[in-house]
Length: 313
Length: 313
Image (cartoon, rainbow over all chains, first blue to last red; front, side, top):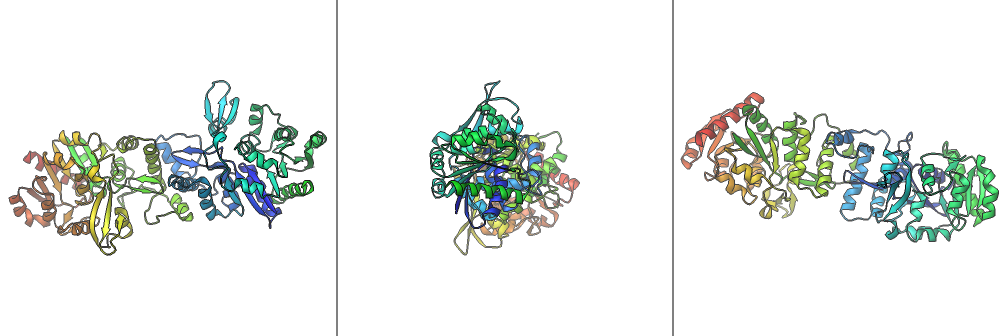
């Protein structure tokens, strides 16, 4: 089976680990969000691609879910001694090496998709990891109060998404082209999965690249709710949902994707009340425990998503 | 007094430490060689400027004479895991931060002279450190055997200057312009000093930037021989001298600079036999112990150079 997954960062990476266990013989292509990408200290940082790569390649810091295991922070300390900005984004020494290699190859004219392939040659994530686009797309946030625009990472990491946002804009998305292989991976897919990633700034950003949403809409699509009992399992998706006027509930997120896109939706047991209404709207709902506590639990979620997809195909 | 020094790496940096002690009230401007500069992993590395900056700023690895004290090598290890080339040039984590900041500022369009000033703001070397040029000059070596051209660093670091060289070329020097302040620092100098740096690839490269040699020739110039008893005190200057057909002796180096450039020359006691012939050619020679064993010995050498300059002025 060909499985294509639209992926954000930590939630997607953990889901993918379960999916690999649940579908060991299947071919998995991951289309990674690059809207979180940012240039720091002149180096190109791709947090979501790296989180997927490190997690599936065995290099992730398991406790925090992002960054490298056994990390040190000498470069960061030295940069601070030079007064280099910004100081609110933490990059470890091991992680710096990834950004140095990436920036070197990008600087030599290679597209991000080719660079990602080079990096994955080391990590062997066991999936094909594609950036959504080789063109730069950077999510920015228009702050409500100040009418200033900040990079998504500044809002997310420095402001902890506590500063109310008027709008979230994927800058560059309107003219971005899907990276080579992206539309093919969607077209060839037996099923497209949405892991429990942020529906606005992760999956929403991927879908905003012209051509991707339409390609996905033609497939059997099953999503896993990132909201359990009215709260994001991880991260601050509620702040993003509030910005676009969507309630923080499993049902509201499914409706936001819409029945034209989404065929099936996994919700947590505590959210099964919403099943009936969603089903009427054309989205098949299944309820089960959605906390990705460990690999068996995560694998069970991935299996359920695949089962639902087969049923709906 | 205004003292201007043309500087290579380790030898110059140690000499400058002595000069600062010998001339505490004087204004010292250092014109640093940038011919050794190289772009590694997409980052701009300026070994000579950094050696001067770290040494005078208290950050140098005293044992090896270059690189940072208390250095770690996590980034390097990670780069090797990615198969990133080259593996023959050692950069530590602390050092990497310098190159990251420099590359970021250069990438933002700042000239190397302005970037060096930013870096020195942290290190407070107690001298004004100027690159010889803001234009890229990279020394390359034409190998005798293979008729291939390699970057100077590859010949020096990877091949340990053991592969015979047919020619040494300062690529880009012919069209390079002295960095802002360089010609002024030479013009305003009461004395120009040549520390015991490599006469070919350090001081020779600085002098090859159009305008610098002529400006220096108009001043009282005193040099310190980098050759003691027929051998370089440090480094592999003999390999460079052989390439340009100059004997490895204190006298031959002075003659290579020439009496039109050099007014005074400090040689080691064991090389004082050459004094008479050089003096006849118009270069005043003084002999003394030239090994820079410690700060007092180095300071005495710098004092002797300044004394000779005053005498010749």
